Image 1 (cartoon, rainbow, N blue to C red):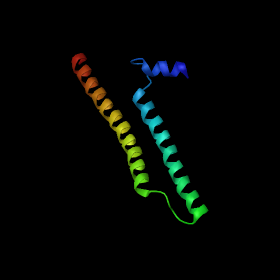
Image 2 (image 1 turned 180 degrees about the vertical axis):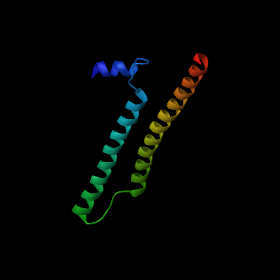
Image 3 (image 1 turned 30 degrees about the horizontal axis):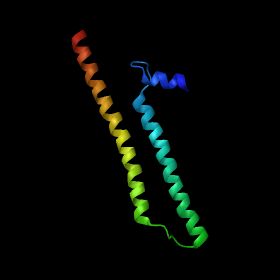
Image 4 (image 1 turned 30 degrees about the vertical axis):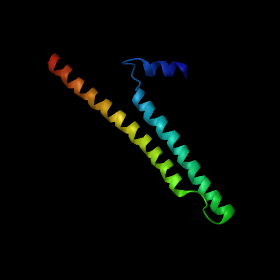
Length: 94
């Protein structure tokens, strides 16, 4: 695991830290949303109603969604810059 993390830090190692960030944020976010779903289902089964503050839950779900957006934008902007660099290198070599 330590070796893989060192490869993520190295430049031109073939491993993308942005892809790792995107996958890790997605998995952690999905786990967090599953916990919210479990709590709501547990509350309905136990009490027969939802007594949890739904405004608070909506803020939590919104913050998890913003994590997804942040990870996606980071990867998109990073890859856009990589493709521009490749075009410049092709012009210089061609």
